[in-house]
Length: 296
Image (cartoon, rainbow, N blue to C red; front, side):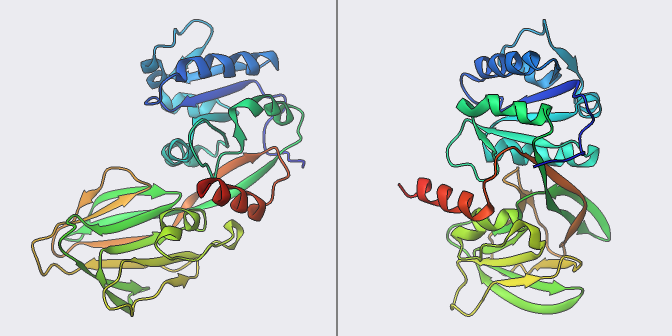
């Protein structure tokens, strides 16, 4: 696996930890020792100091400067930590190496005991896995009131377990269907192995770059998943007919409560998430391994 994507030699590596996970300060120190052993300096964003790391020996920058300075980012945590970082890293075209310290991780390249395989990045023995992202905008009264990028999905869902939602789905302003149920998942191929898969959606190879729409617990059993071309613009219009609130959430982040008349526009984002790969595992071997672990 060879790539000329990164500057050579690699001079600065950023470590981004899951700041809510116990024992992360120790993991950061171990990771930093490995990186320094290959001759690179270690960057921490100021926020990382929240977990009790002393700044001595680190380059501590505001987050934006950290993104600009880093050759690549080691993400310590799980898929949720990668999702949180992806929205920040993509505009700076800085690649991520996921190191799993969580449960089942589809996007993480390494488990923590495999950390020394990071040496392959320093020797040029790696590849870059480019993943499409979604641009998600909530339009209210002709103005964008919320906008974010997602690597996995946008979920439009009722906020009540006792009420259903009614969602109108359009593709390039053409009506596609009306969903009665708990909501809808608009996902990337990366997100097809997450909540979308649990909701009965298809597994999509990351290289395909389609946009999928999967209903959540549809009423009547008539609603089906849809696969859209990547250049399409999907619009979701909530139709309020009961007292249940409806929210939109991207990659598990805090949701935005929708109002009557809102429209959610979803399309391919102008940026991509770059994932570093140092092992020869195929998409399907990783998929089968993770699904087996998840059901064992």
